[in-house]
Amino acid sequence: MTKAAYLRMYLPAEQVGYFPEHVPAADSRRVLTRGTFGVWGEAPRNDAFITAHLGRRFVCPRLPRLRMLEGILAFRTAYPGLTASLLVPARVAEAAVRELQRIQAAGATRSHILTSPWHVPLRWFAAFAPHEREIVDEGGRGISIRYRTLQGDALRRLRRVVDVLDEAGFEEDVVEQLTDVIAWMEGFPPDAMVELDYDEVAELFPEGALIFDETANDISVCIDALADGDVEAAGEAYAAAVSRWSDVRSIAHAN
Image 1 (spheres, helix red, strand yellow):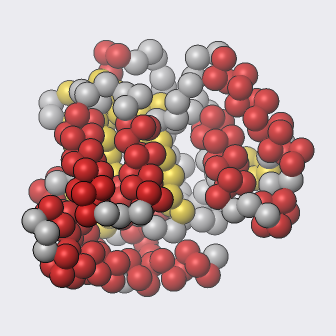
Image 2 (cartoon, helix red, strand yellow; image 1 turned 60 degrees about the vertical axis):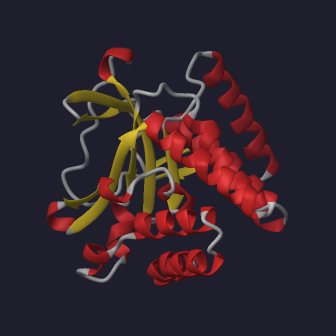
């Protein structure tokens, strides 16, 4: 099954209606749910991740059905042509659109979780400061990495990156990848908490390698150098970030 990393938006508990807390499976086996749109690797229950941060309780609704439908349509858009037609036929996409519209009409208009298969997109790191990196012990799965920050801080950083890239003359499609993340974040309040979780992607790194993973720092150094007009230093920092993920990305391409 596909290993994935996640960008999650948690709301302060007092701003969210009741959701039962998500309880992971007792073992490492993935829950498989078969339905109209194929096999889905998550439990279909509408529960939530619940955690504490800075002395407050935060809730991230999983909304698995909504995310599944969004993912189907995003895949078809990202891989047009024969690939999309074979894996997501037009009739399946049309059914997904209809169901998504029904869910949105009922009030669940925005997913709280972005998913990235096989890697963490480098643009996600731009939302975080290097000191927000946490090494997390996942028990039998080994160690993982997560970053946490408030939505207001994440948006401020991402908007600065967009300004720097615009000033440096980067192409629109590069900047657009960041503005898409910004648009998603803008749907939540400034006191929400954003979490980047390597989750299962951490398992793709050699043992011990994550201790030395400082990708957010590489991206921060890159952007600061660009802002100062030091293109050479920016290129070196970005190359360091790409190098950290080269082996993991090769797995993504192989799949």
